[in-house]
Length: 288
Ligand code: SPV
Ligand code: MG
Image (tube, rainbow, N blue to C red):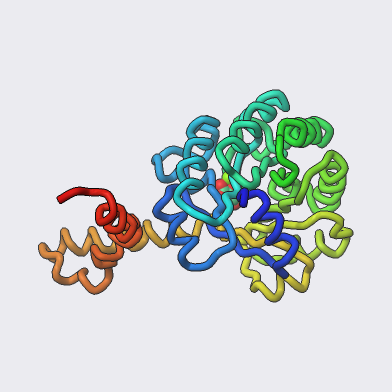
């Protein structure tokens, strides 16, 4: 079954979808093994993994290649963070085709100017006019070849300080342009902004949230009418902390003995590589 169909089915069948961020196949595999519904290929994680700012320093090709490699390593759908679409509505047309060809189930584009800056940073959070962004959505929808491929429109109105009314105005324009879902982003320290948005949203298409700065439980999100929660960066943050602690300890203690209980055994790595599959292929085809 195509991954885009799988994602559509989850939207139809599940009360709420839970999605986690990854920037490579390893983390995507962990996300899948834990039981999340899909992988979010996060621009923030991907940029961090290359030690560059999440500010359109990496290119569309960098992003699309990461999604392609991740997608072929897992069986759950990939939802790709495509920033502001890497240019105009014309760029978006090429981009959407490329991602769909790569097997990605859904792309997400945001209404910021390109080059963009990560939403959690202060500074240039400028939006393009709503009708210009609607053109990007129409372009992506025109480019797709299967009906199931999804285009998620993300409004950064509340990130840019414009408030809930502007987020709602834009969300309705993006829905009318053909978006399959709306991602409403907030960097408030409570979920009040999201709650206010949901109070006035008619839920005609699903709403997606990315709770990084505000806490929200799955039940709270469900009660507000939210359909998908993306835990966008908790994987890489866990990894950074763990790696810092373990490598520091090795250098300070002068031995690996003191960290052995805090790290995964090598057998876990072999399992993540899919060693069982290698063994079975060897058994069937390699002459000894
Ligand atoms: C990402 O994970 O790259 C996102 C979410 O777009 S945020 O970092 O909050 O902008
Ligand atoms: Mg991003």
